[in-house]
Length: 204
Image (cartoon, rainbow, N blue to C red; front, side, top):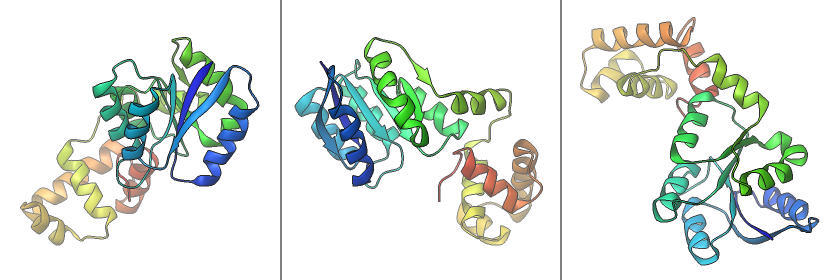
């Protein structure tokens, strides 16, 4: 029996997953959680074979939850379920120790097969996610400071405000923005923010 823990802040999605798993003879849903903190508590209590983890959740993100769980249980097998195929987010999740990365839109087709594969010790990326990673594999990554600047641009701050918030000169901020546009292949600030959000470099 493959014992599964389901973690998502949307009750409807958890219900859908429970229904899918409930129809299987080789797996059972042993617990559910609605945020990362609950996920860690439920993991400690039930020690599931496979954990299904949403990325964006209140209180503690999926990536932080994976790190916390694997800090205590290095053998934990986690499948990320998300609406985002952003390559930066995928890389973070895989670095944190996720074994698979599935888009919520393809759960009905791929979830059960993926649970069995991960339980058997394999790793899985859905084709859309793999394509997104391949597309950006040689890109020049933004520095942590450039990410800070892009996050403040996304918050609607002008260069002057960004400079004040980060204790930089306006010239330095302009230079960071030029680098960000070049690295992301963006036409302007708005385009850069859109790319940053899509790829999971920043979150709103």
